[in-house]
Length: 288
Image (cartoon, rainbow, N blue to C red; front, side, top):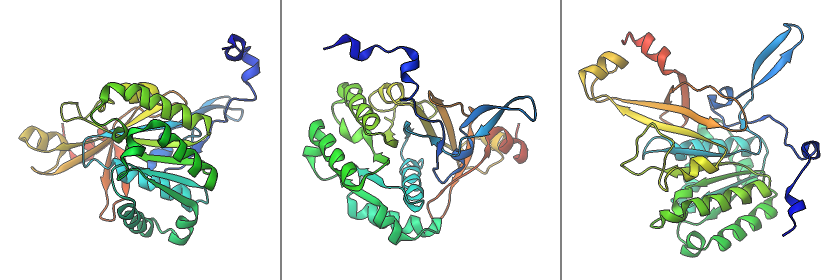
């Protein structure tokens, strides 16, 4: 080990530092990350939407089942492939043939040419191959092969939790290796992580503890609120038994972002449609 390889004068990093711009997700998340720039016309600093998640970020998407995590990952992958970028989709939960059907239907809803999607996307199916899920070297080597084959710049993994099933004590080590790999290969990525039933819906914690949230560049938390009491009805202005879906950016080390909780819907065609801040939703519904 050469210590001098890891010590830099600050100005030596200038040429290595990535530019700050957004990578579109196809949702209103693109308006929720921003940068602050000086505007000479106004003689002050102003917020400007980034246009997506930060370039070269590795973001965590977490939530309990049926909150829309996979749908968000798919929408991001399809949006990028539709824009002409090369995408690697790693499916750890659903067999690839089922992913194909889901992506095809979702591309129709987004108004995309699926022929272009097929040209720009490559898939790794780790759902049925134990070796890929249990052997981290084999997993990363397979990802490296796919990235080089297609020259990808975008990665989605659904889900990272599937790589440490029944061995959550290793979650931090596994997530760190995947994170470092994606940084080395200069990929912008969304990694889906699953919550245990005992973990609060509103927190960034997932299976494996806070390892995912701490190591990755930021977390997008999805949750659903079931309207079960008269207080809920009064607060949210929704009927008993309905579901209120919520989204929040729970920190991002690479760019500023809106911190309030937003209401979103999953459309009949399976798209994520972010509506408005929860406070505005309650005000419009006449809640308390």
